Length: 173
Image 1 (cartoon, rainbow, N blue to C red):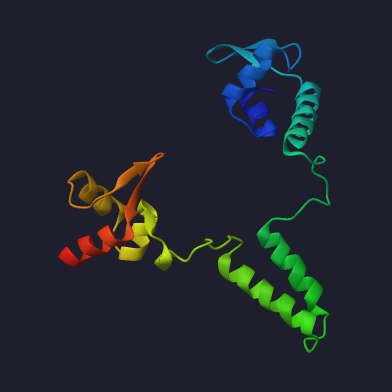
Image 2 (spheres, rainbow, N blue to C red):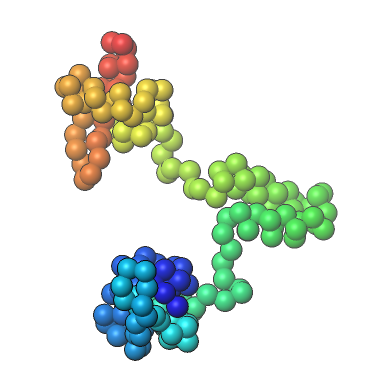
């Protein structure tokens, strides 16, 4: 099994495969003659053993059991499962109506949770939020910030713009 095949099996990069090999986690590595010289040849059973060990390590770090068929489904899968379950429920039942309403809101958000504070009520905005609220492109806002036409502060790795400063900048346009 070549390095690319191992990377696909382990769902990681080829650089990570090289790291596992240098740590000795892939067992004895054989070499075969390839187009561009020697190429590493990994044993499939060693790759499967490492894959199981990595899944166990990830489960320990996350703090729950390894993934099985009974794991928590993704939002799209959860929506499909709930739709199947409520298909047989009586729509007149109050609990069924609440479940259906929750399902519709989950569909509307596509599995993403809405922000804790509505965008219109925020005092400071990230560049993406300011672009969304003002209708201007992020690149345009970034240029305005660098040209000192729009006041902003760098917090962490991104800009934060006061809502009042954004409103005054948009009014000047």
